Image (cartoon, rainbow, N blue to C red; front, side, top):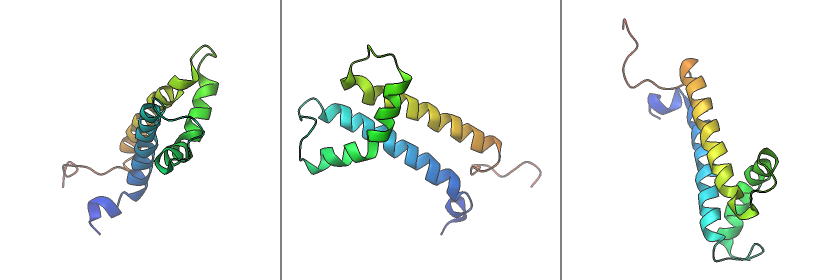
Length: 105
C-alpha cells in the first residue's frame, strides 16, 4: 500500500467515514421527497441505516420548530463541521499526510 495512505490511516478512516455519513444525509433528504418513511426500498433503507444516528443527534441539537424533513440537512451541516474540525485537529497534530515534504528535509 502507498505510504501516503498507510502512514495516515486513522486520518483517512475518520475523514471518509464522516464524509460518507454526511453525503448519505443528502441522499436521504432527496429521497424523502418521493418515498414514504417506511418504504421497503433497499437504497432508502441503506440511507436510513447510515444516517439514523446523525438525524437523531440533529433532532436534539436544533430547536423543535425545525420540521423533521429538514433534519437530514441539519445533520449534513453538523457532520461537515465535525469533519472539518477533526481534520484540522489531525493536520495540526501531524496525523494527516503532507503534500509537500516537511521543511528542512
